[in-house]
Image (cartoon, rainbow, N blue to C red; front, side, top):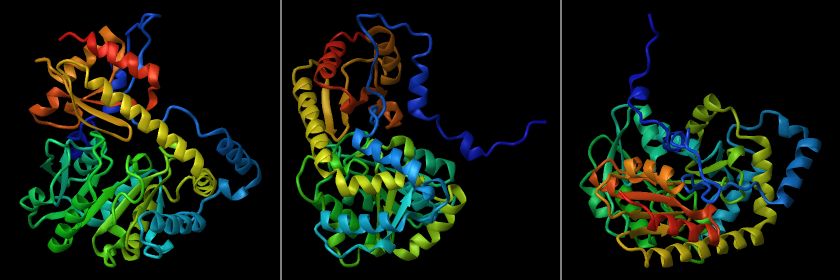
Length: 392
């Protein structure tokens, strides 16, 4: 007799990036048309050499890097995040080290936030198109994702969310710059969501994994300038993208200390502590790599400009949103995007994710997410050449 499965897990869709990778199985790519993989929103290069040298010394010289550490993270890193985040958001002194937790990646920060807020049968509002791992976690723990349509600019509106809040609603979860659309939510939009959440007694989760690649100089919003931010706001962040530490799984959460005390239970059960080498690397990066990060941001913004210019010349295709690592686009064909994406692997040696992975409605069948951050100028030229060759 077969042991039972958790029905919530069975009802959760397969990891989209892993599913897309399976489309490569058995496909031979011609030497003159190698695979262009723009499916995953993560750096493919290792950390900068200077940081790798520091990490090597940590491994050899710091015995603590191989041991368990505090569940909520290294005190020095928590303090550094508190000071730098407060300054970055124009709110000096507004964040303390006890407001900060270091997590095993930003996905774990989201999971921990949800565990502190919601139980099976509760609801969380997610804008469409959603970030699929957020939807997956809600499904796994039996929390209903109530979908909030975004506007034509790929930005959701607080007034639309207000009508979706019910007695079981526990939070609204936003991602800005957005995954998958790249849209950067204007400060006034974020402030409207904060006010709505506060007025209705629910949490506002703001995932800013891609904050370092925002196109606007200065603070992306002033939420931390609100003296009462702790009653409503939960902020999430990732060091994976900014310092190329994807394999070391280091993220962060900023929330009220009483919430972090409860979240500590979840983190201790899940991972005991964040990766010690990754934490030390993130601390070094914060203290010493500002100039390198600025250059990385400039390069991403150059690639974004090339994407926007290219789609302006591509017949039938529309650029719905762009920013950070992403272009979110619509295609001109009758073939659904999930079917077309697999044909593009075979016929164009191009791997992108279909909108069906982010949007369950008919809109998703006309959309794709293109993670352009790992494509240089030549790679972006190649992208447009291959998109011109797509036939349904």
